[in-house]
Image 1: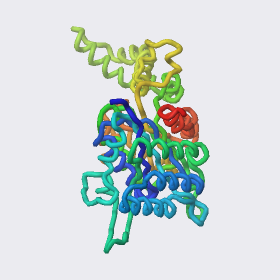
Image 2: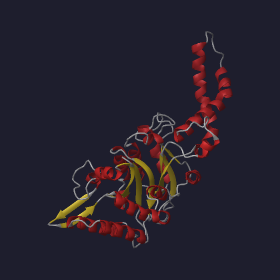
Image 3: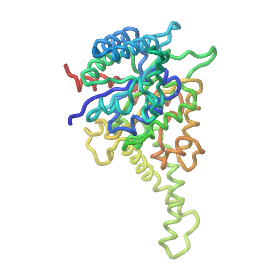
Image 4: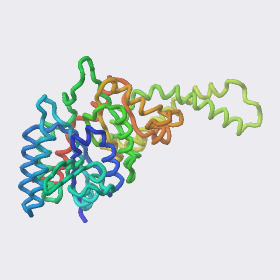
Length: 388
């Protein structure tokens, strides 16, 4: 069976209630699909009108279905449209690729009216209350396409507005007077995407405890050259860190192999000679983990190519964003991280430690530039599947 494209729109209410991580954890662990793109939108009136029009025109079956589609149309106009105060709701668009992707997403998301079953996304996060034939409350949690032909039409609308209405959102959050918001970058690392796992969603859920707002999202495949630039600031610091680790390793190795007493301080001298070599080795391990390519064994052309591994980049905004995110993230070494932090609960070692987060406003700006957080990948995938 050929692969196809499917999409999930995480609704503004779901995002506002910090349920984004829960939705993503189910999408990544309950199905067989690959997350290939993510983008935040602050939809304009023009986008929502076109999307609603396509939805209504695509469904002309029985009266019950027409009724639901009309309810979705009302929902879009009420919840997706710019508000009277000038602020626009935030929507996250996720693209998934795989065999029978549309039906697979329908299975995971669940029926839009039968939401009492907890094993679906709508069963957990959605609501549909109808009394005497009248819909009293309607919150579908997410919106999806329900057939291949509908997905094509609907995604073409979102792709059309992806550059204008999507990317790194600005002026979408209303802050109290005197609050100066910061932005910080989070990278959920490749080991969360190497198999079906709820890990990425659980990490996002943990970051939701900060009360910060997601204003940017992108799936990235970091290339070797890109990774070396991204992690360049730590390269200089690695040598001294490696020296400390080497001293212990050298002392132990010498005592194990030699049958005479080791002179005091000899391990420090050896470690000083070896620290740059050890640091280079560790740096290459980081690059290989993030990209899936060994930087010591590839051609100059391959250094420029996208990597083989996948990360999810998220931009969080709010007061003291950098400090709040790094507190939840925890120490680089999971063994030294505090209980309840991301790295303590989801990390394995100093490289596979769950996530990366910027350590200063300058670093955040630099890192977002390197990974091209605002670059539009939605159009790439839509054109790949629907080239006409």
